[in-house]
Structures are given as structure tokens and as C-alpha cells.
Amino acid sequence: GVVLSGGRSTRMGKDKGLLKTDDKLWSIRGFEILQNAVNKVLVSVNPTQLLDYEKIFPRDEIIIDSGDLEGPLKGILSVYKKYPEKDLLVIACDMISISSETISFLVRQYLENPNYDFYTFKIRGEIEPLCGIYSSIGLKKVQRQLDSNEKNFSLKKILSKNNSYFIENPALGEKDFRNFNSPNDLDNVSAYPKSSDPVRDRHE
Image 1: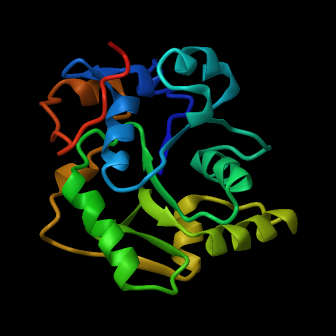
Image 2 (image 1 turned 135 degrees about the vertical axis):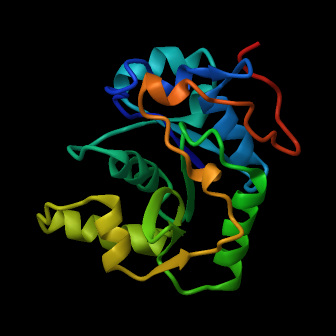
């Protein structure tokens, strides 16, 4: 599992992984949700964030972004380089409305529909790249393309042009995929769904 927390948060003006809702840091919320589904969870950060995140997570649970890319792919590939044989269950730290049930549904689709490189959701026809499973085979292909000087590496383009499994289930609430990008988006933040078996609250 990977919680992507390395973004610049320019529109929010603050590190989103260090924001709180219901007295819980967003990065910890993401960590707990993923820990309900997988055995090991990592937090992806950029180098300037390391000192802050070391106060929250053990050092061996933090992966520092590396390479010349920008955007969330940089974080995903940084984890892939350290664990090249592992498939990665990824969420962005600001997906604070995502539920354990939605993550479990994603994992079930991955297990029941093998032989795809990537698994993610489509909501109203739009790809949601920051809650998905990125297989080691798929990421190896992406790394090869990068090594061959391919320049356009938006996650949506990668998912749309490769062997991806898209989940379009109307039973899934769009609230799970609400974006929190700026302070205005926080005006109506309510208590997010609780994880069914939370880990210890590390920031207390």
C-alpha cells in the first residue's frame, strides 16, 4: 500500500498530508484505510517533507521521491524502484472520503480479474488515477517508456493507453472520490468514514 503525500499542495497552501479532520492527520487516515487491505503500507513524500513525516511514521515506512518526473507518478515509481516485484495499492493523502468498503471492492476486482496492468475507477466517465492498483508488470512498462525518453506521463494517459481495468459501478458513491485541493474545498468537510479496524493513532 502507498499513501501519496509528496505533492506540492500549492493550491491548498499547506501540506495536505499534515492537515487534520476529526483530529486525525490525512496521511494517517490514508495509512489506516490501506492497512485494512494489505500487510505493508508506505508513505511517499518529497525530500523537503522528510523531517515532518519522521515525527509521525517510522523511517522504514517512508519512501522519498526521487527522479526528474513531476506529479504523483514520481511517487509511485519511487516506491516501485524499491519494491520492483510488488503490485502497489495507491491512494492520495487527500482522499479522506474514501471508505474501507471501496478499497475492499477495488482489491476484489484486482483478485477476480487477473492479467491487467492497472486497476482503477471511472466516475461519470472520468478516470480516477489516485485510487488504484498499479502492477509491477505495468510499472515496468512505464519505466521502459520513460527510459526511452517518452515525455507525456500523466497518470490518466498511462491508464487510458495501457491494459487497464476500469471499475464503473454506480453503487459506489461519488463522495468517495471528492477532491480537496484548496481551502474552499474544506468548508463543508464532514466526518469521514471510519476504518473498520484502525491502527494506533500515531500522532498522539
